[in-house]
Image (cartoon, rainbow over all chains, first blue to last red; front, side, top):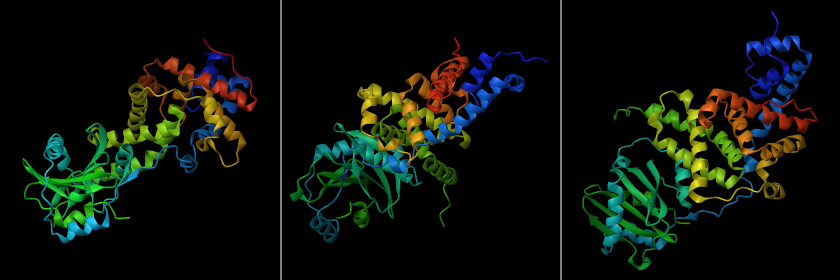
Length: 223
Length: 174
């Protein structure tokens, strides 16, 4: 039986899909030395092509091309004051911010439902997207980069012994350090906003779910 | 004892799969964008979207092409949204981008630069096929092309790369 395709079309197939040649092309190659040589050359190049595309990621990470993320950190004095205070902080509500935070959480009701830890890669991606660094010491079961007051901020849900609490890293919202901690009650939620780094961090939970005991694990590490 | 939540095993497996596939997603994004920072942004967005939509994946074997599809879409969206400037290849080469370094294998360096210089219409299906492991019909579906059109683009991409090896290019096809 003679071959049903010519050299031109055999080479189109070889060059287009060298690893998956049809029976027709294989038959042509068996009878055509030039196309057989073309196939061998293409397959030899194919191994190098795969190696070339598989970029070495250790080189990839050299000389990072972006600014370092902002690190969230609390002044040691603030942490001590908060922990020593047993959860009784200055009550200086910021009603607008509190309302916006609660509204935001209400719009993501699914955030409370997950109990499975977010993979480290996903959490890192959410933090990187917001340009912040945060190292929670409790399992994070929800992580989303959310628009908030014109910026992308990490919206996290962290599992504490008393249940899930929401943590929002507000790198672009400064709070008055003198107030140390601003607690609020808003609708069905209560929470606190604390200065952290050059911005602030908000912790919210449904009313009745205390998170005082978990704050030391929720707050950023003191450098 | 608390019962293990339903779906925990599957979710953990999906998390591990994301971790395993991430390096190839970064590579794939780089070859599309030709820029490390953009590639990192695209993969971050891809991982977040994939995690949110993980319930859509029923067959683990379908995860890889699904993620590659998200990478392609996110890459396109990023350019649409931010109107990023196109990458000047001369700049990429002049800066000696470490992403292209090959630990002393000059031939591989040359091949990477040659791939970077391929027009988008040839480079994209080539990367999808060789790195992504997609078939020509899958590539055709993703790019909105016919299968013969994809075959022709792949043929032309490899034909241009043959010159790197001092091989005679094949006669072009119409």
